[in-house]
Length: 367
Ligand code: NAD
Image (cartoon, rainbow, N blue to C red; front, side):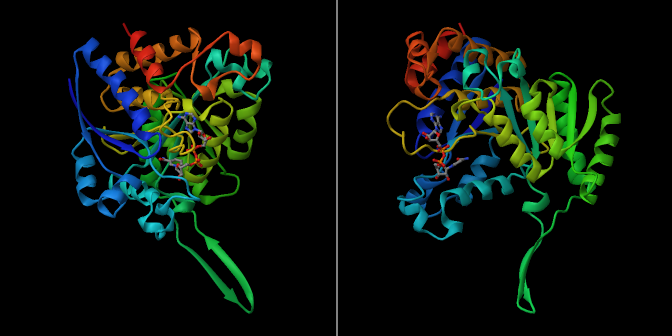
């Protein structure tokens, strides 16, 4: 298969971690007979430096012409970088928001997986962790409270602020379908999260999810109120497979779920539209504090590339191979600085490696 991958290396650690993900994709290509053609796309601070804009029309066109986009991270130190003296719409992050909009990326996927070897980074009790957990938070990304009409007005000397939470049935149906499709490729369970005891938008959400569920008889569907879900994530995370939810609930729950897995350097993500196209990126930022030192953890970006293989290119066996190689490297005791154990005796039992070496080790485990 020939795969056209747009690559946004971006700023800070972005180019370092993306280089390792490309190394792993090339290994996949060599082993399974695929060709990955990369096209570099400028976005973020590096684009501001080169063109004066965080995202140019050419960059949007390049992204649209790709099958998928693999991204590192964008942005700099918000206290010191000159990019943050620019008006908000000219700053690095404005480029990412504009690109998501241009590409109509309405579904955000964030896996929360606990690796056996990194169990000690999990803040939950051992009896709660058990054999670990493996869930996918699927968040609607382009509707709801963050995109509804808002105003702040003063009446009789009292200031009132209003935000509106709106969803139409089509917006709910398209994300629900995506959620069920993904659950069908996993452990076949969807937990749809809402606040249907209070909100009209949630009652519609629940109704439409139930309708979509009819088309997926092999996938179990349950509904959970968001306050209960926040509690269940730390009480019994093993119960979840795919958590399907609207924008704001997903924003909060995905951070909670990722926190219980440990390091930010391990967290992949994907943003999808209603074609096979996707934007794949690590959940962390550009980490300006460690940029250029060769110590950033490339695993989140490598796992994001594995999601690209699975969701854009339907290369499930290849995605499994990358994920297995990551597990094996951790099992073999290799760690980047962010996932090193805290205690001296446990540190002595593992080997600290830098960004490029971690990429090489993962490629080796794919042989
Ligand atoms: P950050 O995620 O960049 O860093 C937070 C901490 O996590 C830092 O100590 C950093 O060293 C560490 N860290 C992050 N990724 C790591 C990795 N792969 N390996 C090892 N350690 C890692 O968050 P921040 O410092 O708040 O933000 C820095 C910049 O990144 C800002 O400009 C912010 O706007 C931007 N940002 C971009 C994205 C994106 O590109 N999607 C997301 C979040 C933040």
